[in-house]
Image (cartoon, rainbow, N blue to C red; front, side, top):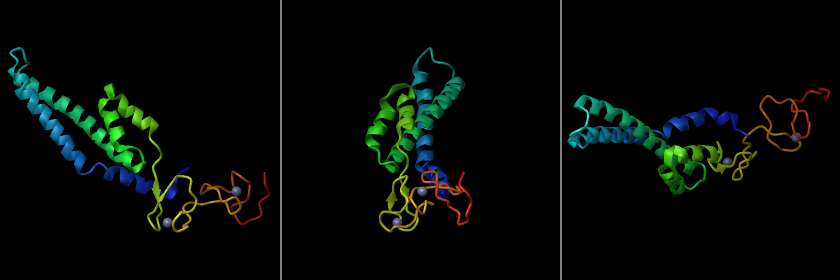
Length: 169
Ligand SMILES: [Zn+2]
Ligand SMILES: [Zn+2]
């Protein structure tokens, strides 16, 4: 079940979670790997020439930078979903071939939303805020379950959600 009115705020949240640390992390990893390729790898007598090493460094740096940012994202995102940040960050880092990252995205819990009136944490599926009883999403007047914005009848008990007398199918 989703909170339709919060969809746009959520996508903004997703972008906000990446700034500004993600840019710093990405640049740092990218530069470190490039410098490593140019200097340390350059000591090997069989190493490729400088321009090739630079190019390889930038490619490897970009890939590892993305990896680092993804791990950082998991670290932040797990907290918003009441999951263990430390555990999932470790899984993302140490499970090889990026499988830890895949595993996280498969197993992550739905995000906890916030009441737009008092900002209390509310679980998905809640109709009313447990702290201030604010109505979080449209619900059936009879059985109080969450219904869609465009629903004409309650999908659970068949009650008409419009005030007109439409014969039930
Ligand atoms: Zn509330
Ligand atoms: Zn109902």
